[in-house]
Image (tube, rainbow over all chains, first blue to last red; front, side, top):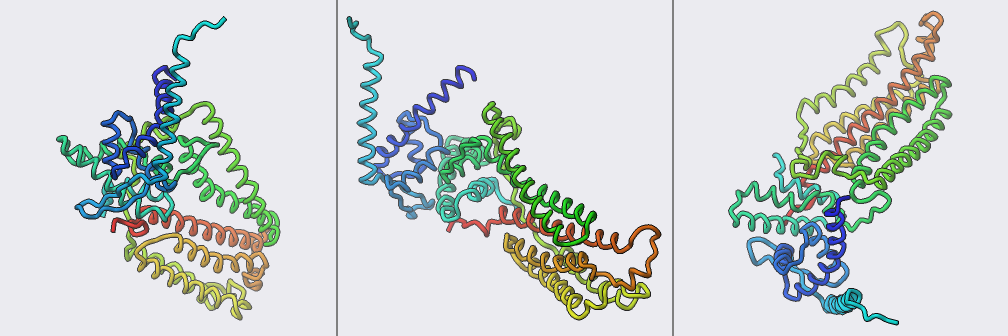
Length: 115
Length: 321
């Protein structure tokens, strides 16, 4: 495995969980698959369609999202929205995220020499 | 009608996800793809290229289907799993039946008698079945651990051209005629041999009390089956099951009569002089071989066609409402 491939594997693993948080936060405003993909990539989350679409259904099955078909326009689209339970989970995940950021910062900060 | 590239992609995904989710995923996936294609067309790409690029970006439909189905595939990782499954399927539907037929035939040659032959058949089925699964899995597990990727095995990364084509096989009148002619010929041969061809009837006349009329009824059912499949819009596993049932009902008694030496007319056999060879033994063995090969060949053929048709049939998969 080259250095690049190693890096990309680790990056992928690091980002995987962030997509869940980002989706739950973004879908407080209802959105459909492709629109969310756009929103996330504009916001700087690198997620692929083939990961995101199954993920949305999985989050729905877990009760974190609800969905409804919007058939008003020419193209029927499935709109997802974060549920109350989804909000709670997202909040908990964000707390964990903050904790991790602090922890990483502490770890990388120059340590005070201890005698 | 040829399926479009989009249909082929969506079908390939859908056939691998649980049936209850198909309608919903079908609609959602098509809408998402259409959105992505529109975005590309707005950006100035021609529609065909936009679709192809969108599908390429979505990637291998089997991976996408695994994502939807939430499958966990750990002994053989997700990269190799579809190939492992395809190979096992092929081994079990083609190689295993052939091995079993050969083993049963070999046993019958050595020792005519239906009981021991069935024993050998079941024994071979179990032993060979277990070995096929074990060694295939072992090889794949080793490949997985040593880092052989799917790309090497399937000839490069996935592209939309690799999607199955799903052309439906329509049955034409020639096929129907062919499927009607063979039971008709067999029935005619069964009746005619009683009065003509040789001095004595070839087949045991005692069986006219039950078995030969039974065979005639079964042959008539084969004819009915041919008409039924001709009129059916879609082939699926019901067809396979019906055909397999017919095969067992027809060939089972034939093999049993042969093994029990009640198939040929003893008068006819005694009239044969093959020198050192025992005509009864050779006719019995070749008759049983013929029956087994016909039965297995027929069922495998129908099963393959039904599976192909099922996968390719838009009617079997809910389409957008």
